[in-house]
Every structure is written in structure tokens, then in C-alpha cells.
Length: 115
Length: 113
Picture 1 (tube, helix red, strand yellow):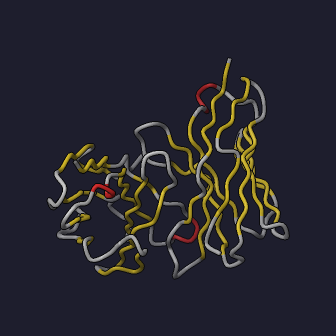
Picture 2 (spheres, rainbow over the protein chains, first blue to last red):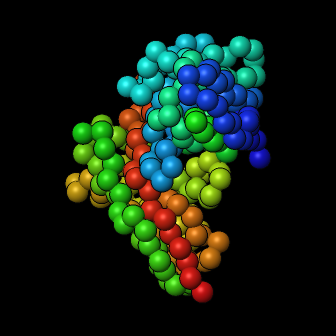
Picture 3 (cartoon, each protein chain N blue to C red):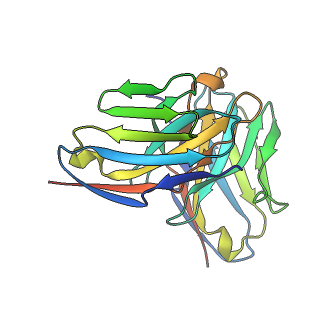
């Protein structure tokens, strides 16, 4: 079964440093998303991306965050200057063209720890 | 308005029993209601989903019951097995043009022998 692949699985970074989280969505999917889950809490929407631009973003997704699809396969989330409260599990997801009838496929996540 | 409220927070069920998790929503624009299953260290995986034009959907041991007038929906797991032990999230989405999923707070389900 096709998978959404995320790397790295765990990243530790110092406060103030930049991090890039990487995702390879399912190849025929056109819609891409980032969600995060702070330990023990619910999964929260960050941003959706379609046709090389952001479709929607949450209030969490401030100027410190950016997304990019640098080539035909990767989808990245960059946090410019990490804060302690950015520590969370970050999930990438993708969806098909006929997305209304399908759920997302999530990756296994990147655990980001900011120290 | 955008919240999805989920209960209980945790649930312990004996093997072979029925596990029931409930969710409620306010936004009547929601028109797609999936349930996700998450194992430790893994991403949420779609389990089953329903649209508000039906009151029930069954897939194997998993059933969603949907009450549009009450704005509530629930997941029933029949003949619960130890392998069902996971965290379950309900979610809701407005249709085309608004892609984000709004998740409930999750239920940690433990099936005991």
C-alpha cells in the first residue's frame, strides 16, 4: 500500500535554530498538509497546499513557518527560529485529486524536540 | 464553532466486549466525519468515515452511528480485541474548498484479556 514517508523520525534542535522537516507524499496525490500533535493532545491543522501554493493555514502557522514543494516529490515544512513550544510530533498528509471521498493518508511523523 | 468534542478520554474494555466512543460537533457545515486510529509512534490511519446523509455505516467490526439532528456521531467496535488497543480520534471536515480536518481530543482505548 502506498505510504507517505517522513524524515527524520526524530529531530532535536536548539531553540532559535532553523529546522526543515521533509515529506514524500503519495505519488499521485495532489493535496498536501502538515499537522502537529503536542504530546498527549489532539492533532492540529497547520497548513494545506495545492498547486504550488498554500490553500489554507491556521493561526499556528505564523511567519516562522513556511512550506515548499522544491521538486516533484518532496514537500517540506521549515521552522525558521524554533521555540520550546514548537516541540511536537509533526505529521505530513496527502490526499487524492478526488479528495472529497477519501481520507488523508498520514505519514508516521517527525518528533521535533526543541531544547 | 469549529470544535469537535470527544469522550471518553480513556476507555478500558474486556476482550470480546463493545467499545463505544462518542463525538459531538457544532458546525453544521461539516459534511464528512472520519475516525482515525493511531498506534504509538505512528501517524493517524483512517479507519472508517461517514457522510451526514446516512445514519450508520459498518465495516467489519467497526460501525459509525450518526445523528444529524443531535450533531453527534459515535464509533462502535464490536468484539473488541487486544489489537484494537490504540488512540482513536474522531474528526470532521467541511466539504470541497475547505480541506482541513478538525480533530477531537482522542480516546485511549485499552482492551484487556
